[in-house]
Length: 350
Length: 268
Image (cartoon, rainbow over all chains, first blue to last red; front, top):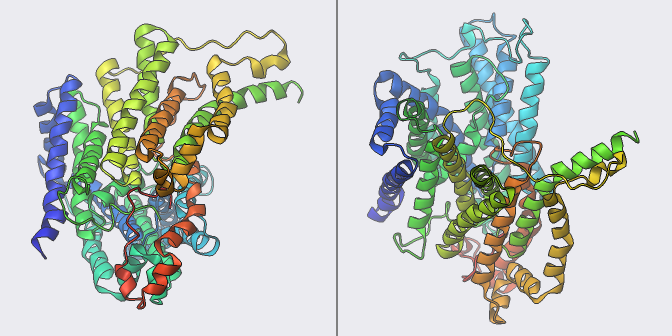
């Protein structure tokens, strides 16, 4: 690990994040709020005590999984904008698998739910991958459109086949306790561990296996990969399937760990936030964990900031955007802060 | 059916106008080779600034001006990043969307506080075209006619003027355009800010439906349609026949870089 690598992938993003926080303090001043009070409340809500930390980690884990999903796809040169839809069908499939299995022994329903969620996410992503490979349909459009289909599909399910038996609200039956992820204390579910475990695994697959090499080769230069006999079409499909499986797992974990049932507007846009998470992490799996933690802390702290300082909770979006813009500026070849362009963030649209 | 038809046509026109304006704006920037993912954020900003201007002065025209001005400011910011700093425009555009979401939300609360009731402002009145039921499709506020008038106008500019030719040349072959003395960067910045003000006009348009705030609305998708058709061209330019035949070993070609270009080819 060279010094330049460390500067480019760790020091710079952290410095940029601090700069973004500083710049957003100016926005707070302009909005007539006390920046110290607001940012203090933000930090308090994110890291103040055990429950705040648990909240942060709980909000981080879906972002880690979807962030990894986006990072894998982008590294393979496939612009998967569909993590949102893949997360939703994952949650839908997990609910559909877990509800009828409510009476089954403890691990069966849970494993079935998580498995079904990943499989459904993978299948959803495979639609866009197949269209791209077979028909040369832009995966950007296909995945965005499939997001809308997934939203309606969840709506249909909770108004129809999966609606609770009481029939009062458009939501699914609550999952049986045997289908829920075990809690770790302080209101934190064990899905956090699954997310944490998948970070090194994804890194290993991406950087130390032939499969990961194919993905990266395809992403760096699909034509060169083809000439080297690497079959970019296969790499695109496998990367999308892996990406979709991770996003689907995120949905399954949200159902079995957090909400306990499926309803409309199930995802708060985590699939879209994941794109920002992955880009801030420079598409590096380890970095995804760090940047998801940052985004998760912002999400967890935003509520307390709104209560204490009277600043709208969406203010944290400004911090996120400024962090991305600042990182883009720091990467700019015109400014020469880093000598070499990174492959992922600064790459052109395929 | 005959009674429903005019009403249907009227609401189709009314609902289609925001899409039309945004799509026209995006068209200009796409033709200049600039892909704008941030159109959603610009619409959001335009909607907020337009509302604010209208709310403070009571004049929809001032609102329209505020919307155009605010989105143009954001457009200049985006151009500074994409053209000035040579940043990736997909990433910068996505960041702009997030920024607009945060800025408008924070500003809304700072200006209006917490209100349960929806705020209302005076809007453009529908033109008085008579009382007949079949005239319903024509009973639209002026911005609808403005948007429709822009369609042929834009076609003439793009297809039949020097400026339009320069704009399309910049989009299709920036190097060639530059060699003939067309100011590529200036055209792109111009196209971008033009489309930004166009997109923002949507905000002030008194639409019966609230401006959508979803993070990826269909316009975004439609705007990136050109990409699939261009992907083949991108591969070709990266590996022109001369280049690929001169690179003897496939393994070597992993290190092959795209031919250095002063201008980023945007959709390819």
